[in-house]
Length: 209
Image (tube, rainbow, N blue to C red; front, side, top):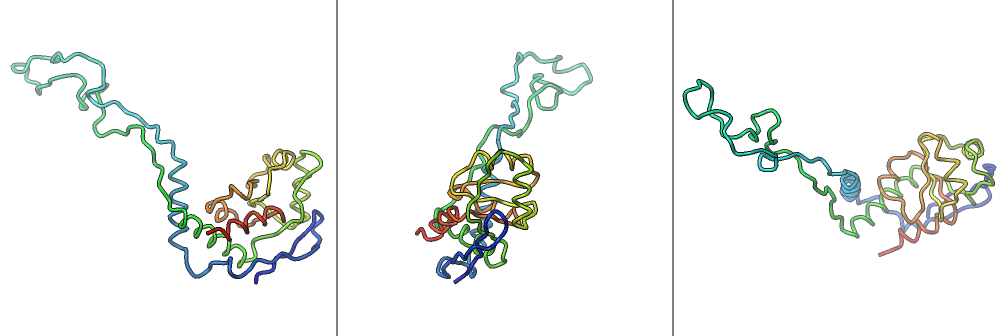
């Protein structure tokens, strides 16, 4: 059983949050993490690079000069890749870089990544995560009270508009819903701040089969 301290907005410990050992995975899943991160980053690639092949370049089939007698190398058409303004040989075309990831592999990767964070003491649970006003200084004061420095990931059960607006101007800080947080985000940030309600959603993801 892993026990995490629960803090209020002032940074005072107000209770404990327990994570069952059955939800923690620390003895397997390294390859699953790699596959998950590679698939996520591949999915971010636009894949919009596009070039014209020699058959797609506009132009006639007229020879630039006659075949023999000029002393120059023979040339058949100006769309050839050897010409400036011609086509591109083996150039890129629009494509999708998305990779399929098995659901069980993705779930194992998330379990392993989050378990490592808990084991390393890099997860802090907050009773509630909300602000009265959308001010960056208010969010900075909250982080200071919790003893958290950027880069940090804030995981909530539902997005609070004031929290998002207050955090977006802070470098190295991201706010994400517990249902949407992915393995890459968990690994990228050295500090995770999770609301108590958000932790329930994370636990539900760890329990899912």
